[in-house]
Every structure is written in structure tokens, then in C-alpha cells.
Length: 217
Image 1 (spheres, rainbow, N blue to C red):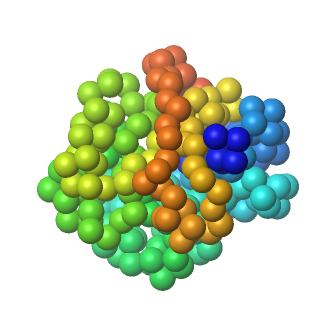
Image 2: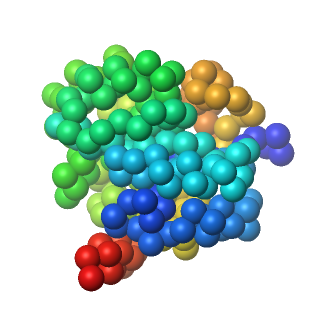
Image 3: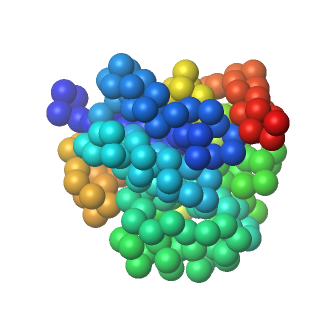
């Protein structure tokens, strides 16, 4: 256990419209909580992830949460930003060209526009590395249960993440992974991941609403 890395796979900075977390604040909270790696996955941008990586290149992995025409894709080791609004297949194609590790955000969350219809998810399953089987911000447990069951039925690896939009949320759901380097290294160890998960109550979402409103005024 001592040699395993504690990884936060899904979190946001103020580069996302619904977060106020500064890159420096994110880095500091990860250090304080003993998180070894963090994938910064802002909505449709890698600007926040790049800013955080400059502060701590070993800690921060550049990622992106990309809104496609069918649902959201969650990627790690992104080197070139992917725009929103592409088809899932085109988004995945562009990520594969970069060698990125590809997961799928909260696939069965019916309350979010980034959730997926099962038939659309089935189309991309052969082309992704994993799906998110636990997201702390899923309002109802059945959404995460459905994702976990789908992954087991289709023999797909799983990722978990806090989906943190505020600093206090970081680390609520983590993966413990064997030591790895780069996206190919992550692919080799992902199926042996151990999960530490905690649900985030509905009032956590107020941080996102506040960020959206604050940025409008």
C-alpha cells in the first residue's frame, strides 16, 4: 500500500465557469491532503490544468472534461485542448492522436446534460480506456450503481473522482494505483485500482452555483 499513488481523477479550477478554485489553491490542498497525483479536468479547456502543472509538474496531470454532442468525455494526459461540441467519435479520435487516457464522465447521471444514453455509450465503449463508476457529485446513488454495473457487464475499467468544484471537495473520491508514468502506464495499472469514495451532499453544489453567478456580475 505504501508504494501506491493516491490519485484524484476529476476536479476543476476557476478555468471552469462553475468553479472559483485557483490553481495554486488546488495544488496546496492536494499537498495538504496527501494526494500524490491530480488530474485537472476543467470544462472544455486545459488552461487551468496547465497553470497548476507549472506550480507542481510531478503532482498535476493535465486533463479535460469535454462536452460532446452525446455526453461528456473525461481525459487525462491531454496535450492539445479539445473543443466542445464535437461528436464523441471525433473527440475520441483527437484524444487518441495525443495518446491521452480516455474515460467517460458520470455516464448514467440523468440530472446532468453531460450524462449518456446507454445506446450512445455502447457505441464508444470499444474506443475508451475506462468509464467513471463513481462520481461524488452524483445526486442519487443509483447513478453510480448503474455505471459500476455497466462497467462490470462490459468488462470496462473504472475511474472514480470527486468532481470537485471547490477546494474543500478535493479528495472525496480517490483511486489508489500502482506507480505509473504517462497514459500508457496508467492503462497498465488501472484495472488493479483501489477506490476510496465518499458522496458529496447536495449543498456542495451551491459552490458551483455561486461561482457561475459571481462570474456573471
